Length: 450
Ligand code: PLP
Image 1 (cartoon, helix red, strand yellow):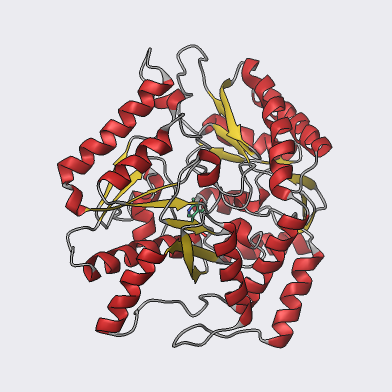
Image 2 (image 1 turned 30 degrees about the vertical axis):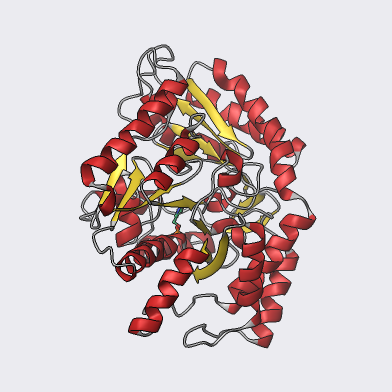
C-alpha cells in the first residue's frame, strides 16, 4: 500500500468528517490536500486545483502567505498562549480589537473574541439575553432569522441557521427563533411580482411576525448581508433598509453576520456597508485571519456594552468566555492578515476583479443548465435547473450539483455544490487572468455535466 493509500485507509477507519455522507465516504475515501500556493491547492498525488471556494469561503490572501507564517512564529516564540479572563490581557488581542473598531461602522466600539463563527453567534444570543435580563425585560428573547440562513451549528447558532440539514435529527431549533422568508427573488418572488413588491412583502411579513409575537418578546434580527452558504443570495433592492427601519421602530437589535461577507468579499469593506445599513452587532470570522488560525470577533455598540457592564457591577462577573478567547497567535495572525488586505488593497481587488468574474459568469446565463447567475464582488453562484422557463429544479435535488462538484475536481476546480447551485468564492488575491482560467475550467465542468 502506498503512503497515500495508507493515509486514505487511516482516514476512513478513524475519522468522522464534518458535512460528509459517512458511508459514501468510506467507499470513496478522502481527497488528501497536501499543500497550497496562491489560489491553488495540490492533492497528495500532485494534482492541481483552483480553490474556487477559498477553502471554506475564507482564505483571502492565498494559501502560501509567508507574512502570516512569520507573524505566527514570532508570537509563538514570544507568548504562545495566554488567556483574557479575570482582567488578564495581551498586546495582539488589544491591538486587533482596536483595529476592528477602526475598520467597522462608527457605532461599533467593543469587541469580544471567540474561535469560530458558531461560538460567536452563540455568544451573541447569550449577550443579548443577558443584556435584556439586565435591562429588566426578560421576555425579549426571540430571534428573527431567515430560511436558508447559515449562522453555524452549535445549539444556539444552529437554531438560528435556517437549513434543514442542520436541524434534522439534531432536535433544533432549541431556542426561540422565527425563520422568515428567504430574500431570494428568483426563487421566492411570486409570478408577476416585481423586485420592489417582493421586498415590500418580506418587510411586511417581518412586521407581521413581530406584531404576532409581540415586540416586547423580539430581541434581535440576525442576517448575513448577502446570504452565502444558503446559495449565494444577494438581497433584493431596499431589503436591508426596510428591515433596519423595523428594528428601530420596535427596539430590536440588528445583527450583521459578516462571517463570509466581511473584509472585502463583496468589493466593500463589509456587507452592511455594501448594502447601506448599520447593525448594532457585527460578527466577523474566516477572512479575519484568512483562516490560517481559528478566530472570530463580535463587534458591538457602546449601549450593549454598558448594559452588560452595569449588570456585572450588580451581579458580579460576566460568566462567559472561552479558553481561546483572543488567543495571542490567532489575533497576531489576524492583525498581520488585515494589514496585508489593506496594503494590497484586496477590497479594491475584489471590486475590480470581482466585476470581471461577474461579467464572465453572466455569459453562462445562456447555458442550457443555468437558471440564474448571481453574486457580488468575488462571490458568485450558478443555479442549475431542469427547465429554464419554469425554473423547475432537477429531481432529486442535489444530484446535478454533486455531478458538477465531481466534474469540477476532474477539471482542476474546487467549487461548492449547494443543492444544484454551484458556488464560487475564490481568494481575494485572485488576478484577472486567473479569473479567466477559473471560468474556463468552470465552462468545461458544466459541459461535462450537461
Ligand atoms: N456564520 C456564517 C455566515 C457562516 O458562513 C459560518 C460558516 O460558514 C458561520 C457563521 C459558522 O462559522 P464556523 O464554521 O466557524 O463555526
